[in-house]
Structure formats: C-alpha cells, structure tokens
Amino acid sequence: MTDSRPLAVYQRFLPEGRLRAFVWKYAQSTGGRRPRHFHAEPELNLVVRGSATFGVGDRVVQVARGDVLAFPAGQDHALLSASSDLYLYAIGLDPVHSAAVLGAASEPAAAFRVRLATGELERVVDQAAAIVDRPDAEQRGTELWDRIHWLGRQSADDSSDKAHVLTRRSLQLVAAAPDLGLEGLATELRTHPSEVSRHFHRDVGMTFVRYRARQRMLQLIRLVDAGRDLTSAASEAGFGSYSQCHRVFHAELGCAPKSFFYSGRREEMQRIYDG
Image (cartoon, rainbow, N blue to C red; front, side):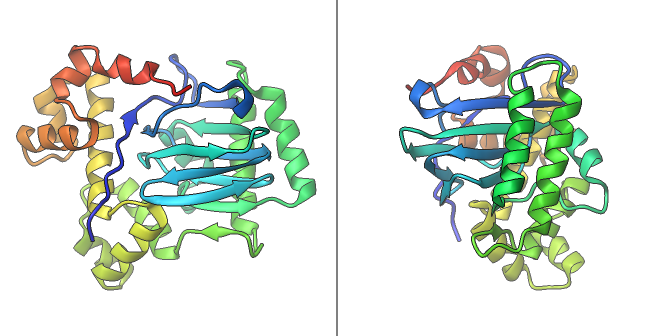
C-alpha cells in the first residue's frame, strides 16, 4: 500500500522555552490557521463549538461539539473546513513528558476520536479555559492531558473512533524501540506483518514505514538542537546513512537537512499560517 503523501511542514507545537505542556485556542472567526503540518509533540483537539473536517494523514475525519481528536507525534494534520462558529482548544505535551504522565503501561496518544458526555465536556472546557495561552499553567495543562486520555480510555460511546489495539501497541513499541521494523513488530505482537500494516495505515493515515522514517527525522531534529552535527545525529537517529537522511528530508519537507537547519527554511515553516 502506498502513501498519498499530502504536503506538510514541520511546525513546533510548544512555544519556545522550557514548557512541557501548553493549551492554545482556535476560533474560525479569527482565521490564521496552520497549514498541514506535523510536530514532535502529541496533540489533542477539543471541540467546544461548531463542526470541522480534518485531514489526518490521508484520512478525513469529521468532528463536532464534544469531540476530542488525538494526533500522535509525527502525524500530519490540517483543518480542511469548518463551520463559522468553530471554537476548539489544542492541547500538546512534550513527548517525553506525555509518556511519563500517561505511565509506562499506558498506550501513547494514539490516533482516536471520542465524544465526551455533556457533564465531562463542561468540566474539561472549564479547565482548558482557565489555562489557555498561559505560560505559567504547565501543571494544569498536564492534568488536563491526563484527564482527557483517561476519559478516552473509558469511553464506550458509539461515536468513538478508537485506533485498533494493534495500532496502539505498535505506537507504544516503536516509541520504546525506534529501530523496530515491521517484521519485528509483528513478532512482538504475535500477528502477521500485513495485519499490523493494514490497521496502522487505516488508523494513523500513513504507512508504518513512513511513520518510522518521520520519527527518525524528529529524533534527528532533537539531536541537532542538542548540539550534534548532522552526520552523527543521522546515525544516532537510526538512518542507515546520511544520504538516506537526505532522501527522507526531501520526501517529507522538500528540502535538504542543511537547508532546514542552516538556511532559514525551518523558521519559514514555523511562520506559515493560512488566512
């Protein structure tokens, strides 16, 4: 199965600094939405009012008031269309912090859509409204993240759209062992590689091979930001060679790694917003 490869840019979710959790608000009436993008941080979108259509990888997902839509780290997504009254909160955590919050035995922020009951929706909306856009609200943002994931795991609503258990376990295993290939993953899950591949593509909107390549690219970005040179970072991130790293960057972002880091391309991507 091949990827349709929708064009996406890399954009950081968390504001610059040392924050590990943050909550943004978005209203369709004010415009300025992001283009199709992906980032290292897992993200939740909580729809407070209105309705919208999202592109999630090569999937299309409809959401409305009360829905929570989750994007795992590295999954490209975009708001394709929305009602004029759309209002939502976007909640994101540093991936390491998210793993610590959710616990080692818990699955990561896998792709899912759940609808919250009215009472729970009101409570989490009040919680989000109290901390939105505040740089001093990391702890409460973390508590909101944990609460919504707990509600997602408890939900038995027919409107829920949870990822298959093979997808959830795949995301968990790859987060712990980024070099794990499809064959090894299938062995760990005691199933056939085609089963893993089929459910993963359906739930995440991209093939497992592409997802793993994107995770390596995100790891390379983290390593270079920490001071590593490109060649050693590419090797440590799991690329077989620098030329392979170069090919992945071109396929995903349309530029070479050196252009991304040292010629202003990364900053250009961060500034792009659609009117």
